[in-house]
Image (cartoon, rainbow, N blue to C red; front, side, top):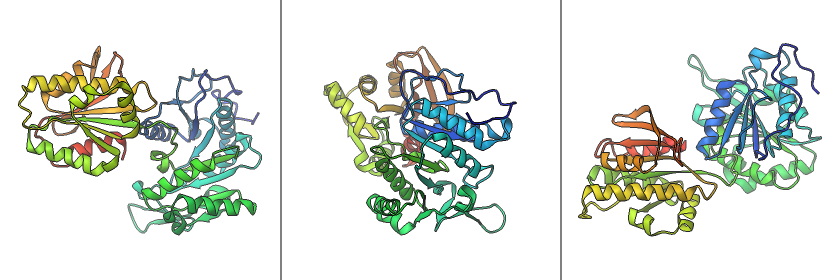
Length: 406
């Protein structure tokens, strides 16, 4: 057992976890970081729990995120991180990761040291992915470029900050841009020569996607592997065979709505499917389950000149959305949210969810409020409604991207 400060009562010996084994466990330095990690997992469609004590009952989830609360509870970050890493291993997590601040505040080197120790691995492959392009943090030739509000950008040596100057192989931008196979080939070549620490450069979201895909393939088999990241790549990793999708339900009664729907379909390309409510009502549950597992966006629309009464159209949309949601429960891909356009459609969709309570949320854009349903078979689902004809051509696309985290 790693020694710990006497004033930290939260971390005890490894305790038995729940019956289901979570796939991934991430250590975060504080609650804010833990919530950011958990949010990105949820955007990936994963079930996740944030824990801060080994005494907590662990729900049936795919991912565990630990709020270590390092600053407020302990003087030994390496010891605390080692204890939590060992606890995650005891929970059966196949993938382990430690998150560090992208500007290397705190004690990231001590945390990484404790993380490796607590993993119980004798000589693991360690992948370090520090880049966070969407937050302005770039990693070039092993150096982190951090923007500042005043003066020039900071340039920080990642190896000095994280591994105390130990030798690490830098996988440069040229290799990262060349794709997953190139990254794996270079890592494998250096691994055979005895290298265990790898630092992956990155300046774009595509680089993070490549890093995530490479890590997925490298973790296969019996290879011992750990990852240390700033959290930027969690939008792409881990891919646990479970992803989320969004339903966009909008009768194309107005030209503005038609333009908005085209923007969604065009932006997501092959990741989107456009269907009518009749298509959904005629489909089998097996077909619908396949649709929810293959696409990130399911667009439901009807022609402007269908000739049907608007109330009938709204009723069909409500039934179709419910059928998609029911079918998704049969698979591992869950619905992250439903976006509706038009008052009649929104009303029918929500009523068909059999909710016992509606909890209003923020208005994301003018006349685009969020409501989360409680009770019923789809309790917790978020529904974002938009008044018909409201917004710019990109309004539905912005709402969908926000739900998906894209």
